Length: 291
Image (cartoon, rainbow, N blue to C red; front, top):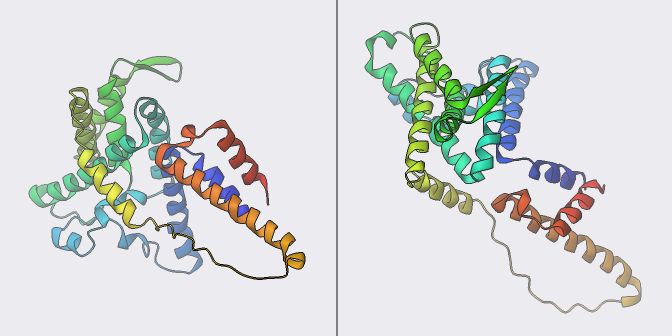
């Protein structure tokens, strides 16, 4: 039941916390595996980072999303995940997990497109061959969405209350100023994500969800990888009831409990932990503590 306990703990996380956990896990694997196997430090991430060249991109088109799960160093991942953690709390108080994923991954995509476009349009970037990694574009999309949708909300920063739009303006100006310096592509990707977050918030306030099509696409992909439940067929088996009734009951109870756990976890995946009844929460908590 240890696996059930892990599934239970993971299921209780918010969608943002799950994304943070995945990013941290990828960071650890990306650095630990090459070290232990004495491989080049970029052995894993070179298959997932976003190259600046269009032809190179077509050899690994998945990189327009996967680059966001890899980070350059510990401070890169820590800062991104901290901002994502705090901003997601505000966003998820307003909208559901699907909206969060729409904004985040559309920000990642827009940031990647802005990166490739700038490096293939502006001559000043022609000599730079560094690929793009990091979740910053998605994080900026979440940050600027929140700051645009509810600009006058105040948050506590150290000892001061600051309006959200001040925070958003600070990060956008910081990236604009730093473009001529190092990591120009990274800052441009940040701005691409920020633009998506701004437009998403403005259009949503007008009643238009520009991420609805993307959400339907994600649902379609999820359906493709969701195993279909088989319909159990009734079979008559003749056994010695005296010798098998006890063990059969135990197996039946375990199978029944496992099915109930799977159904509850599926419900969490679709509607979130808070959609569970108190009885379902109690049952899942009890199952998670059993070994």
